[in-house]
Length: 136
Image (cartoon, rainbow, N blue to C red):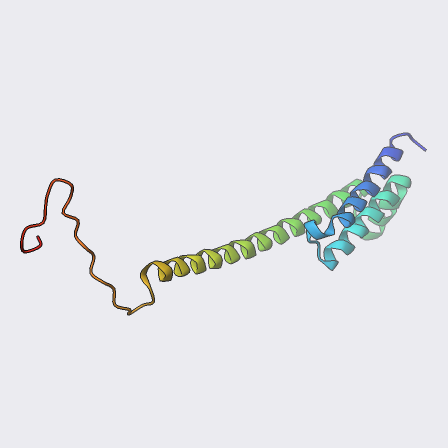
C-alpha cells in the first residue's frame, strides 16, 4: 500500500463524519445524505483499489477511469450548484415576504389602518415667528 492512500482515506472518512455530525446546521436532505455516503464509499474504494474505476469505465464505454471520475464530479458539481441556486431563491423569496410584512406592520403602526381619519398636521411657526391672531 502506498503511503498517500492512508491520508486520503482518513480525509474521506473525516469529511463524511463532519457532514453527518453537523446535520442540523448543514440541513442536508435524505437524498443529499445518500449521495454523500455513496461518494465517500466510491472515494474510499477507488483509493484502495484504483482498478475499480477503470473497470467501471470500461463497462460504461469511457476510455479511462480518471475521465469517468471527472464526469462524475461534473455531475455532482452541477447538481450542487442547482441545489444552492434553488435554496438561495427560496431564501430570497422568504426574506422579501418578511420585509414586506415588516413594512406593512410599521406603516400600520405609524399611520393607522387604511381609511382611518388622521388629524391634520400642525404647522410649526418656526423659532423666529410667533403665530398671528388668526393662527397663521
